[in-house]
Length: 140
Image (cartoon, rainbow, N blue to C red; front, side, top):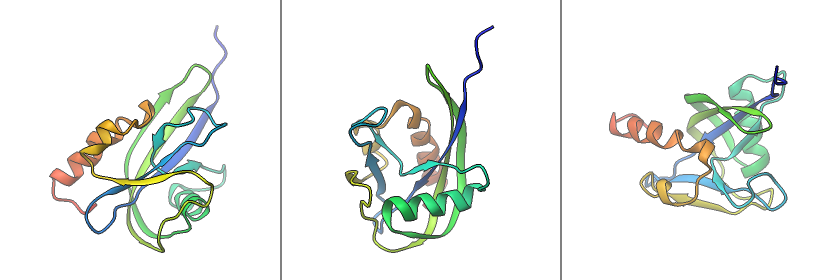
C-alpha cells in the first residue's frame, strides 16, 4: 500500500476593502509554488482553533487585528507529497491597514479579477464560494 500522506491544515482569510476588493498575497521566492497568488494565511498550530489561527496568521503576515470572521469553505487539496485542508474564512471586522510584514507582494483585486491573477490552483474553489456569497447579498 502507498504510504499515507501527511495532512496540513491551512487557514486563510478573505479581507475586503471599502469598495469590495479582496486582498491577495504572492508566494515568495524559495517557497513551494513561488510567484503564485493566494489568500493570506498559513498553517494552523496543533492546539489552535480556526479563528485563533486566523487571528495569529493575519497579525503575523499583515499586521491587522481580526475582530470577527466566519468560515466560508473548507476542502482538501492533494499534492504529490501531501494533502492540504484549505479553510477560508471571511473576515467581517478587522483593524489596522494590511501591510506586508513578511516581504510578500500584496494586491487588492475584485472578485471578477480573481479568475485572471494567477491564483494558486488549490485556491480556485474559493472564487465561486466568494462570488456566491456576494450574489446572495451577504456581507463581504
